[in-house]
Length: 120
Image 1 (cartoon, rainbow, N blue to C red):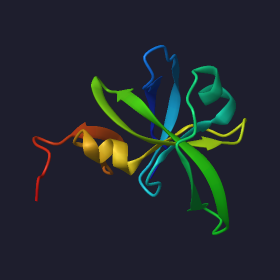
Image 2 (image 1 turned 30 degrees about the vertical axis):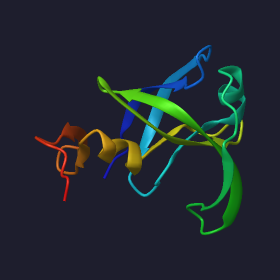
Image 3 (image 1 turned 30 degrees about the horizontal axis):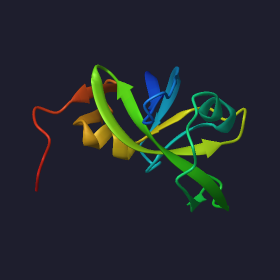
Image 4 (image 1 turned 180 degrees about the vertical axis):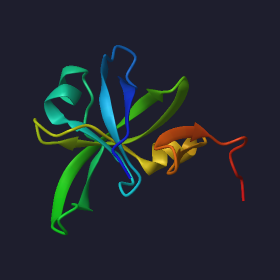
């Protein structure tokens, strides 16, 4: 399957927080979303904690994460955003996708809305 990108705006949850907008790679193997740490600092996002994450190459790395409002495709959710390396490609993880009822259509290599979000 080809790569899918979507424009995402991350907004700091603090009242005077800023916003970061970029094209994010949609990665259904990633649970959380990721953005460059320097961009997150620019919008005033403070770390909420640290987690150990397994990278695509199988290595484990500890990263800080913060909480942000995540907007894409006319939808709004909130969740963890990992503070990645400065040159890291932004990633939109599966938790953000599922929380607003968006899935990947593998036949067309596009994102599509589900008719309803499952509660079961």
